[in-house]
Amino acid sequence: MRRYEMMVIVTDLLDEEAATAAFDRAKSILAAQGGTVLDEAFWGRRKFAYEINKRDFGYYGVLDFEGTEEAVTELERQLTISDDFVRFKTVRPATRIRKVA
Image (cartoon, rainbow, N blue to C red; front, side):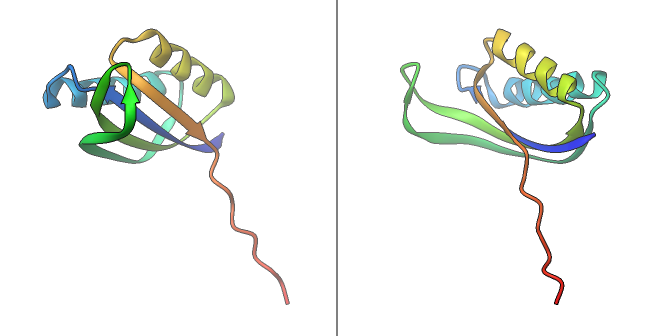
């Protein structure tokens, strides 16, 4: 299992309760695929830097998790299908390299 970070943007057409539920749904999809959420942060409603799909605001959330490549692929597939998610980005965080003197 590898470590990943994912930022999601949920549409602002939903109220905050529904946006939180959509974020929780992403976590449950990950858990169903055998992934483990290490840390999470729901940032709430924020203004976009630029207009996306004729909208200026969205609900931001960040997931720090461990999972297989297949779990990440399935999560991304389901987020793409859902109308609740405007954007998402998954990255593998860089590991720190210690220099041995």
